[in-house]
Image (cartoon, rainbow, N blue to C red; front, side):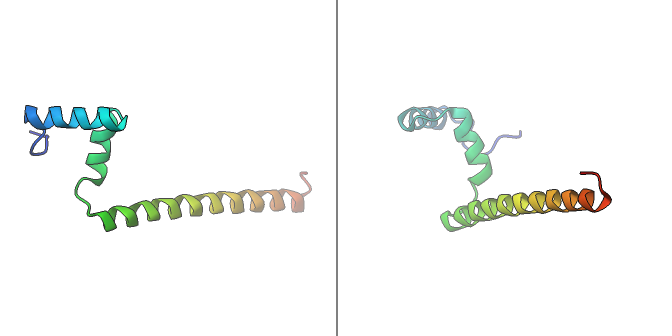
Length: 80
């Protein structure tokens, strides 16, 4: 039984469907968000999103620095 409590209840499933329709998101998005953020409090969810943004920023910085390093290495070796 891989489902969380409440997903088996037809009333809750209907409620989720009506909420999704009213805010204009798909049920798939709702359940994905619920799975990802369902157990978090509001401040924890905000912190999590901030960390995700920071992680993306750092990944971009690392990729740019790696590219710069490769370009400098090729220039030093005369492969430009």
